[in-house]
Image (cartoon, rainbow, N blue to C red; front, side, top):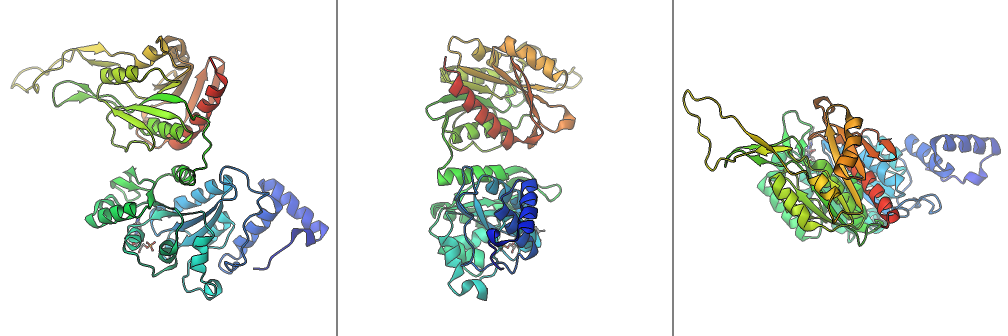
Length: 464
Ligand SMILES: Cc1cc2nc3c(=O)[nH]c(=O)nc-3n(C[C@H](O)[C@H](O)[C@H](O)COP(=O)(O)O)c2cc1C
């Protein structure tokens, strides 16, 4: 690929380029790079010819950072297109390496166009290997991310194999390596993969995910879903230790998940809360430097990284744990706490008696944890509550502001049709005394990131 100097173009071409770049919100140089990459991804520049994006162009937390992104051959490879976009919008330079199998799932053309760089996949490329390009790829990177990390790639890494470009780069590197595994839950839990996981962790390889949930194959669920692009970005930022820490020195108490209210030793009343939103917020706050104490109801997801977690079952246990954790700078109460519990928990399993009527459950009200914190003598400077509603969302949220003594209520519609409870996306409204802010539908990680940033900004201004 020829190199082009924009200043040498004739004026008319320069003007056309300027307008096109402005329409796309890009620099002229970036626009040219994208056009050329889209035209000729395979015949792109050799490794030696590629220059880093001009440092004047990139802004954002990852500006000037070079991420070598190795894309493995799994269904989750399509998520890498979004991952590349997310990394680039934060200023990173992304250089993609595709395994041969990955090319079955995403095209080098779309990967190259989004990364605005050549796609590398051939270990024995005459063009790139004249100066041992696989070593150069590693040397020029600040960090290597593998997403999706297939069972096969993990096995190769653990075994020290180097029979294709991806595995050769991974064996030849001394840079931090982050992997985002993605595979069928049975592959993830296979003894061989378990052994490889341990080996890789002992070798200093960092993991992000996998998450639990529905798999692409119908009827399959469990641990093995690749972490979401924003989770991977956050893990990269953590590994490069570049996340700004506006919440350093601040303590935040949080709740997340459902509560279980016992009926007898084996039965309980619960709700559909998965803890995904609360846990994501806890992780996002911790990434911004806060000391986060999370009181989690019973959930099946992993504890968020960098967070102190207390596990509880019932609303009363949750209240006691929260009270023990005060005072704090902020409280973010996300848990779906059961409003009622049974009045008399049976000491023994309630037996079904032939001909007898079904037992009538007598209910009593549970403590209101959010109101307790909002009206406490040790009230944090910022109290944020969540209101899961199925009707009159805003009216109910507004009422809760005063009733609960909260500064903000994050209201979300949890009607069945929205799929919010247990799902991966959320559309929330932030209700405060000065109005309502409506956020578009987005992933729970994005909600978490935005809310954490808003909390950081608020704690910097509310100095009571
Ligand atoms: C439709 C399809 C989906 C696949 N999805 C995955 C996957 O999600 N994770 C995985 O580890 N392997 C998956 N595989 C198997 C890999 O593609 C296969 O092991 C391949 O050799 C991996 O090569 P790589 O590790 O060099 O990318 C899938 C295979 C097919 C045909």
